[in-house]
Amino acid sequence: MDLQMMTFLVVGATFLLYIGIAVWARAGSTNDFYVAGGGVNPIANGMATAADWMSAASFISMAGLISFMGYDGAVYLMGWTGGYVLLALCLAPYLRKFGKFTVPDFIGDRYYSQTARTVAVVCAIFVCFTYVAGQMRGVGVVFSRFLEVDIVTGVVIGMAIVFFYTVLGGMKGITYTQVAQYCVLIFAYIVPAVFISIMVTGHVLPQTGFGATLADGSGMYLLEKLDGLSVELGFNEYTNGSKSMIDVFFITAALMVGTAGLPHVIVRFFTVPKVRDARKSAGWALIFIAGLYTTAPSLAAFARVNMIETINGVEQQGTPYASAPTWIKNWEKTGLISWDDKNGDGKMFYSGDERNEMKVDRDIMVLANPEIANLPAWVIALVAAGGVAAALSTSAGLLLVISTSVSHDLLKRNLAPNITDKQELFYARLAAAVAIGIAGYFGINPPGFVAQVVAFAFGLAASSFFPAIIMGIFMKKMNKQGAIAGMVSGIAFTAAYIIYFKFVNPAANVPANWWFGISPEGIGTLGMLVNFGVAYVVYRATGEAPEEIQQLVEDIRYPKGAGEASAH
Image 1 (tube, rainbow, N blue to C red):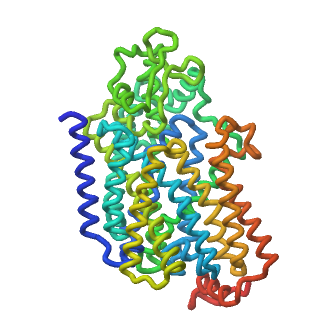
Image 2 (image 1 turned 180 degrees about the vertical axis):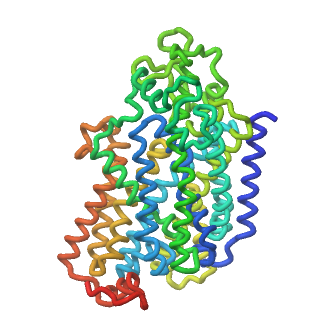
Image 3 (image 1 turned 90 degrees about the horizontal axis):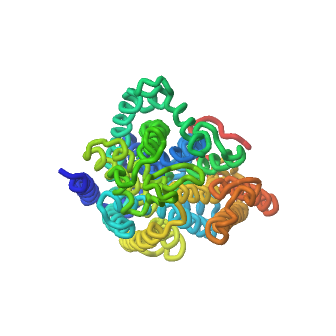
């Protein structure tokens, strides 16, 4: 059976599985649609949370970033992992105690203001659309190669699948679909990593292969070889970073606090029966996430060595294009890899200086890795299914946040409080359908590669939601005026900075022009500080929150039976 037929069978089988689960678990009420009825098992919820959180950026793009950037790419690994720990330990249990469906719901009630709720809705929609653009792009990249369609068609196919199980199943359908998607994506990530680790280093575990010597008998360590190749070919040394320390810190911090402020991840902790179950599901999710995140650096290193040697040859003299490997010809059709014979010798050459003749999109590395290593067709098809699963699982969660923000927070809790449960469910599904259309447009016309687009979303979440949630839980006197002013100023500053350097004047997007040397990917941390600062100044100028709100916060942090509440 050829590769394309195998891919059709594997990907098609997973689609049928997802649709079957959506039909089985379809939502019959707003409670089902928003929080899956609040009765999900902690282990299943942990698995669904892992799938929701490990997006196309984690599956497709993160190892590609590390493969191309080396040490500098580790900021994504550290930021996203640390962010989940921050969310699980500091925010999730308290938000679950509050008992609201959505983050705007929490902010609207905690800050006793419909204006605060509306600002939170706008922020949620802005963040989610930015994030989902990266996911739909990931779907397009996978389909363009493995189903041999263009990226536009690939995005449309992805839209149709997500539309079906998001609009029909709501959170209930999404939750159990994400359990299946996690199983698919983690298996698809680990299997080729094990194969390639054995081939390159002789180690079964990719994590130990990462620090091992090569299996070719040279006695050279994998990272030692990568450093040598990188310097020889004009790249930065693989194990040394080129980013400034301040930019590394700000990007890592933005990804961490952005994770803790992502509404589609936070809402997962409302789907379990008890607060104790929220803590358990957070722990299970961390275990499930670790499988992929501890594998990514080794997969990135294996891919880098294999790609360079495939293109340049083992002796780094260039490979004749006429005898180029099949994977290069296959990916050329998608436009994500190309060759320009600058010196006219008919040989491909890949380097980091003027000798370079190859354009290789970093988003293809994980997907192309099994082909580069000449793994069996079923492994390649499995990776395609895993990439689609990662992108679709997160897309569904994001689109659900958008639909609930519109139907529950904007309509039911604000503009049209008298609508019935049935009407609210209708508007939620309508909002999801519209959101999918807009998300598809941004997937076809993305503002950057997958992980970069997702990094922008994390920065926007860091500068808007995170301070409002933290102050809402741990600063009981914070008032609505401060929270609103902080959210507006934080997200406005961050969005303006990103838009200027990425859209208005991209030629100026160089370290010399960045404020304090902070890149657009890391500016969310500064936006967060702006949010905190503005909120505090406005709060001090306008007075404390009402006594009943302060008592509400006190009850969330110190429930009855937990000991005497703090007087501070």
